[in-house]
Length: 486
Length: 93
Image (cartoon, rainbow over all chains, first blue to last red; front, top):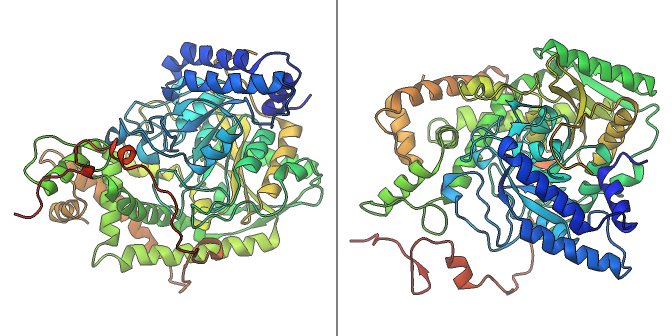
C-alpha cells in the first residue's frame, strides 16, 4: 500500500469506499473536537468545504476522472489570500480584512476542487519561530500540547501533524515551513525562489519569501509541489518548475548520489539532534550514497545577514498598513500622520514593531553601508559558497533546527536567543535554494527531530528523491493522538 | 550601542509611537539585536556583489488594458469612504 496519504484517499474516493462529503465531515468533526486544544485554525470554513465536497461527489457519480488533489481536505496559512475568506496574517491590523482576489497557489488548488477546511495560525506577519507571536495565541504541538508547534507556519504544522487537515500550504522566509514541520514530526518543503508564485502571499521579505507544502510524508509533498509549481505572470520573479514532475523520479535508486555534510551545520547543535542526523548519514551510506564532508566558513554570517535583509525588506513592505485602505484604523486622532502612527502602534504586535525598527535602522542614512550593503555583499559570498558545494555533491544534509520544540512561553523572553534557533534554516532562503525537512527521530521526551535536505536551485526532484528513499528505509513519522480517524 | 534618542528617531521614520514605559526595554532589546547584527562587520569583505537570486532579469510585458477590480469591492475593506474614494482627514490646511 502507498505511504502517500493523498494517494490513499484519492483511491478510496475513486473506488467509492466513502464519499468526499463523508471524508470532509470527518475532518470538520475532528476540527470541532481538537482545535480548541491545538489552536491550529483561526478561521474555519465548513460551508465552503462541504460545497466543494459535493461538487467532487457529483463528478465521481457521473463517472468523471478526478485529479489527485481533488476532494482532499486541506488548509492554507493565514497569509495566503483567499477571495471572500478572511485573511488576517494573525495580526490585529488585518483582523477583519477579507481579500477580493485569490493567491495564485489557491487559484490553482481551487480549480482542482481542493477542499479548504480553513485558514491556519501563524506568527504575526510570519515573524517568529514559535507561533506565539500570533494575535490569536500560539498553535500547540500535537505530540505534546505543552510545547509549541513552531513557527511561523505553526498552525499548518499543528493541523497536519494533528490530522485535522491532510496537507497545507505554508510560507518560508527563514525556515517558517521547515522548522514547524520538524517540531511537529512531519515533512515541509521550501521550494526554490521563483518555483512557486508569491502572488497573493502577504509579503514579509520579498526576496526571501516562498510558499511550499507541509504534509505527513514525502510523496504528498511531491504531489502538492508538482501541482503548485507553475509559472505565473502575476509574480515578476516567477519561473515555475524546471524539468519534469518531481513525482516521476521520486522513487529512483540513490546509489552513488553524493550527499554533502557541511561541518558548520553540526556545530553547536544539541547532542540528540546531532546523533539523529548522524544516524541518517548511516542510513544513506547503507543505501549506497557517497558522503562528502566539507567546510563552509561563511555560514556563520548567515543568521545576522538574514535578519538584516529580512527586517529591511519588512520595514518597507509593512509601510502599506496605514489604516486608510484596509485593516484596523485607530480612532481619536489629530491629523493623518497621527492616525497612521496610532493605527500602526496599536495594530502591530511587539515583534513586528521590533523588526520594522531594525529594518528602518539598517536602511537609514549613516548605517546603510555598514549593515544593509555589507549584508548584501555577504549574501553574495554565501551564494557562491553553496554554488561551490554543489560542484562536490548532489544534496546537502543538515539538521533542520538545533533543538526540538520549545515549551510554551519559552521563546518570547529573549529575542536574540530565539533568532539563534533559525541558524540551520536561513541559508537556504538567503540563496534561494530548495530545502525539505523530514522527520529523523525523537528526543528523550518524545518530541520529533527533523533533518533537512538542501539542493541546488530548481533541484527539488533530487532532494525529494533522497528524502523519499530515507523515509522508505527509516520512516520516523508517528501519528499523534489527535484528529480524524479514517 | 544604540541610544534612546536614536530609537526615537527611527520610530518617527517608521511611523510608530514608542510609549514612555516601553522605551527602556526597547532600547535594551534593540541594542542586543544590533550588536548581534554587528557581527557581520567581522567578516572580510570579499567584494562579492549580490544582484538577485537565480539570475532573474526584469519581467517585461506589453502594456495592455485588462479588467481591474470593481471599485465598490476594493472599498469594502476601507473603514471610511466617501463618493467612491478612500476618506482621510484633510492633509493641507
